[in-house]
Image 1 (cartoon, rainbow, N blue to C red):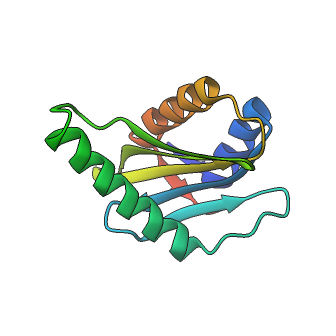
Image 2 (tube, rainbow, N blue to C red):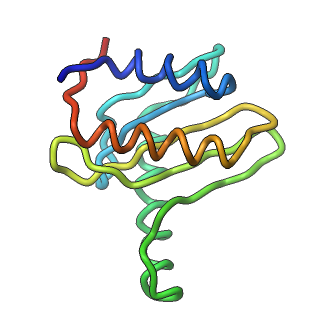
Length: 128
């Protein structure tokens, strides 16, 4: 099954209505797919590097300090939040990142990102 990353972004944005950016990155920090909305601009290489680094640190903290499996990292600010979760795409470890606008619903974001992560494990994507 082939899908478009842009269409997955648009479908997710109809549910959450405040997505500024959605990105799929390799675990070593390379962008696979990225979509921005609402005039939001972010350098995809920076987003990928930050996502990769923060997820690696979060994963290490979960294992070493909490003796548990990493699930997600959230960064909350006055202008929105950034969420990163691990997933697989074409059998490789990846990171799905979302940047939201103001007044995000963390529960909804977590639910829909996990749903999208499950979809990514079974599809092939095109950029368009």
